[in-house]
Image 1 (cartoon, one colour):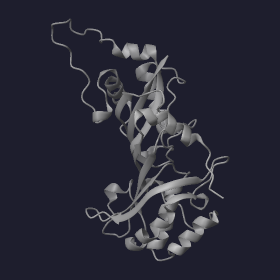
Image 2: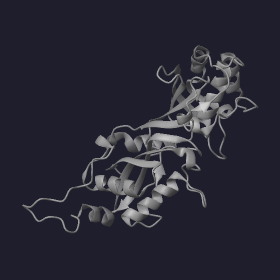
Image 3: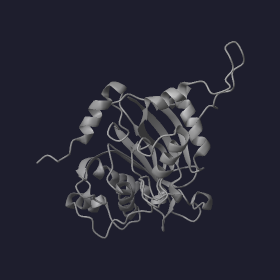
Length: 305
């Protein structure tokens, strides 16, 4: 028997070779699972996590989600009062401090997991919260959508060296109105083969639910907010590259539409640097619909006709 645990995470991707564990390389998954082994006394196999989005090297996250299954004996050990706990009727020792997870953290033993992990994790990874979830929850397949933001600085006045690890610098001022006008071409269900790095045996059909382009009034940076049910490898960075080419005046919306229909990735668009991209949020259905959503997501897609 086991208990499924959801972990909400944030990390700075600059010093990681992406999420996925790779021998000899520093990855978010590797660092997190090593911490789980250490603080919960799990075996490496018991500490294996499933993640909502396998971010590339250099990509950041504010709203990443992962899950793992904890053995019952681990949960029981977490529920036991710590050694030296006060007897009934006396003052109890202070519990773990409140975490940034807020509502995502159920206090109790799951809150203890959050507290212990953050004590041993490096500064560029934070567990925002932990909580037990139904067995039907799957961090990857139960997700309704993922939302990313790609940030760019396009003038010298906007380039802030203090944010250079999270904002991509581009040459020449971008016309955000042109970019915003072209964005709807990509909305809906399409084969995004021309705007992604395909993986062998994997489909490139996705449903793009939202794509907005705007200039942040406070910082002057250009922000591309992209939401889809799922993303192909480097898809957001290719979309950012295509819209940047349009914003710079090299292409227009008709070019983007023709590129999408062609299904062939050519010299353009260029893939944008990873450090401008942040996974902001992942959304899930109510508990009763988790398993059904996971089943739908596992179905291989095809376009009509």
